[in-house]
Image (spheres, rainbow, N blue to C red):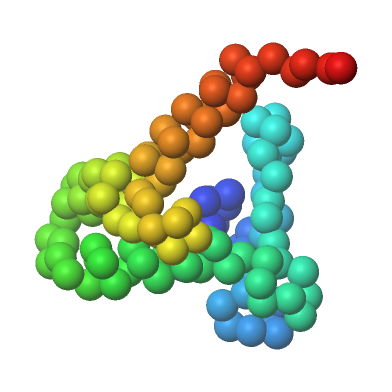
Length: 122
């Protein structure tokens, strides 16, 4: 697995706890661009639950169903899946069985409705 923050394998150091866990030594670009690396706390499997759920969905509903032949195929299909399927059509139980785009629109409409209400004190 290549780390997006390093250009060589020598910059990636395995921790020894798990073969999929890496300690990353990012260059100054993370500070320069005000990026923060997200890592799960030791012994807490729930820190990255949302990201892991998304990756599982992406794998089962997109990657496993397509026979990608080139990197260009991947670069076209993955964004299409996220924008057109995952965000616009796929129902999410955590959002009341609405797609994210529809949930966000509904939320913003309700928020704008609350802003137009005036607080009356007696």
